[in-house]
Length: 120
Image 1 (cartoon, helix red, strand yellow):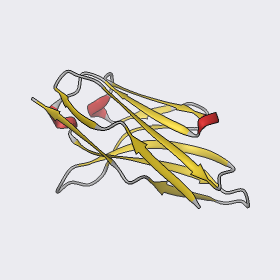
Image 2 (cartoon, rainbow, N blue to C red):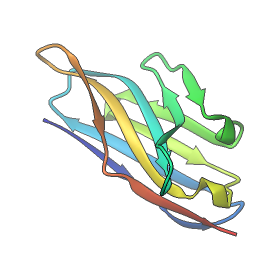
Image 3 (tube, rainbow, N blue to C red):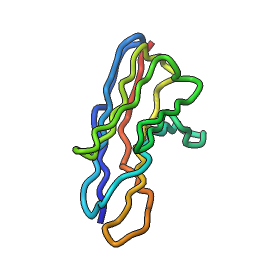
Image 4 (cartoon, rainbow, N blue to C red):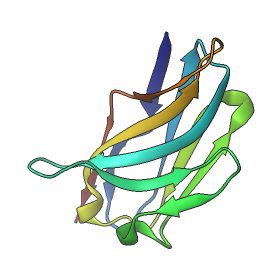
């Protein structure tokens, strides 16, 4: 089995910074894509940022220039450095990873989510 655990959320004032972490563990041969998604009540979960195994990055339009995604393959961990935070960045942030099993085949796993609240 695979476990995905996020950490680092919290309450921050507008203009502040937070760093989220997401670690995968368990039956993992390798990890392909890793990403962060955000969900607010009444809206669909949206992509915030994603990074491939080769290091290519993709960002949602609303966070470009403010958020930075990175990964540590040895630690099976992905990070999201969030700066210049705005109240509209508030939401539950979910980590998603594409895991390749030791016996072959890939599956996507979600973490439980971590709350980020930005006060004005």
